[in-house]
Image 1: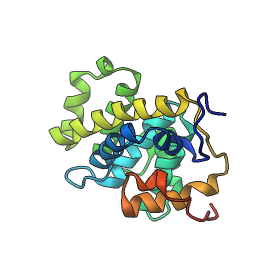
Image 2 (image 1 turned 90 degrees about the vertical axis):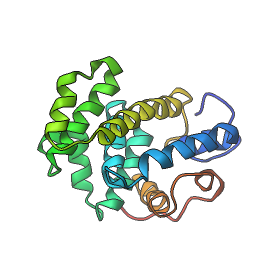
Image 3 (image 1 turned 180 degrees about the vertical axis):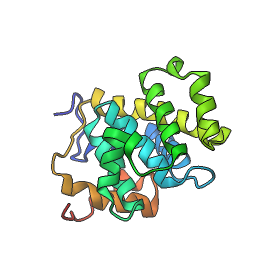
Length: 190
């Protein structure tokens, strides 16, 4: 049960955004800028970074929501997304993405945990300054998003079949007001 009276039944961050549309707009804009851009990292890679940081933060809603969006981009490859969550070093992803996930994991612990060696290693694996910048900003932002969801005890569906329809909607339409003003799409079997 949420810590505040939301007057809606929307799950996760959606209910919180509906509670305060004034902050929802900028947060949706930030999510679009971070996760849907195609320069440098792909939207799939960006969602994997968000998923991994949310998993490290133990934010059930966010790591399942963004994990399902990543699944959508990876043609339903849930095994890949699960492996990135639990053991990205052995996941079938690029060495560059592995080096960026290493940085994201350090940001999740604290910004000062990122070392010059982490950055140099990412560059050696092909990461550009933009890739590194975006990784750090995604990781830092998801620490905020995760704490927002969990700090207010947002409604979190345990039924994993509720996540794929919303993931498809976000992958196709992006983040924004529609995520808290339109009804939940029909559930799919996981």
